[in-house]
Length: 247
Image (cartoon, rainbow, N blue to C red):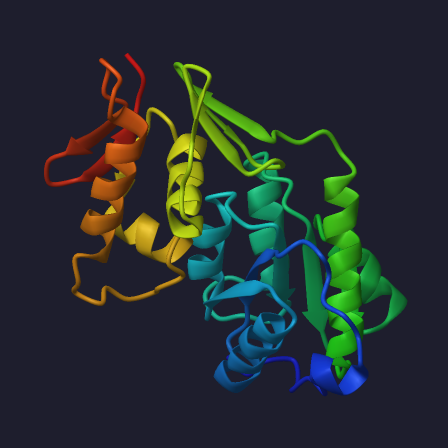
């Protein structure tokens, strides 16, 4: 399907803007490959991570995970239009802020987008600096709410704000990737986490590099959070993935 229009963008470095202090994980649902890749690169230059979905069905499946801070959704998409994607995730109880991109800029169009569950509406063409500013505002609104910052599984505790991990009161030192891996596992405690989920959400890969990078990091993490303790918490589910479960 032909997208609304190609966005007019300016790189963050050209605007002189400083990136927002908190790195965001952004899902961009856009079927124009060139525009999507540009946004991914531009968000990356601003210190954020952007994942891409090229159609409404894929975008809905990714957004349904609830693992994103912000959704940037093109209104006209193949398979399922952007507004129906937003409506569907709202029906699922997912309140991830969503910004709608569209060439349709009349008042009625904007109202329709907001009533569908969008939190903001930006008309094409636009400057990337404005898009970035709007995304940061949405993220600040969410950050001002009470959000879970400490995850616990039995006597294992991870604090996102202080960036610390403790087990039975003993502090455990983790490397940044190990911390991110543990955080993701603890967010999904009691659930099987697949290799694909880890590649996409911890390593930001949308393909399997056919390496043992996950196995190596899981092994190191397991050694750090289980050595000296009687009860294992990080379990391998044969043929499926991993599960963090206490007891």
